[in-house]
Image (cartoon, rainbow, N blue to C red; front, side, top):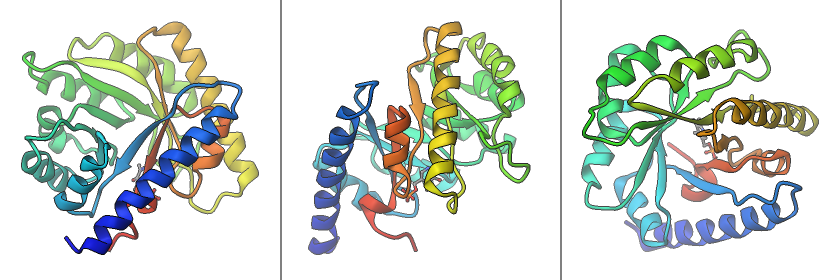
Length: 231
Ligand SMILES: *Cc1c(COP(=O)(O)O)cnc(C)c1O
């Protein structure tokens, strides 16, 4: 990898960690915020550079691409998250290779992942993807269906319910972002009352990280601000 590119990754990573910690300290929640490095469309080499700078959690969006990197980097102590849309015919690969899935939005996918997760592995950590604005064009479970899906997942022995995630439209303004993220925080706290295993609220990307942390995210998913623009 070109030295300059590697240097930029290390520098950006350090800067983002600093920003996250500074923002987290200013919230009323005062929780630490986990940084998930979104490595889709970037090479295994780029991941290795971030790893050597201390990053341990990485996320992929595409099954084939993600599995290839998981296998290539098997020797490293990485926690892998799957965050992309998931079709039924790809659940087996995800159940076999990932540690977390953040994009569960229906029972059928949860059931398949549970059936396909080997009992020899720890349970697969699961976040429900919430369509917080009830946008008909977007994937994610509707607010009114969260409790039923959470209940289903919590009864799956090979899955562990850890929380919820959301993706906002790229063109929403700051006020809308804050409103949506704040609703997510409320849903998260309600879910925690029902399911003690819930400890993760995943929201905020390179463009809206500040608003997400302000509203109470405890995991942010950052891609381009670490690795640069994707092809
Ligand atoms: C690509 C992606 C990210 C990271 O987006 P950036 O804008 O590059 O930080 C986060 N979450 C999901 C679900 C993504 O698909």
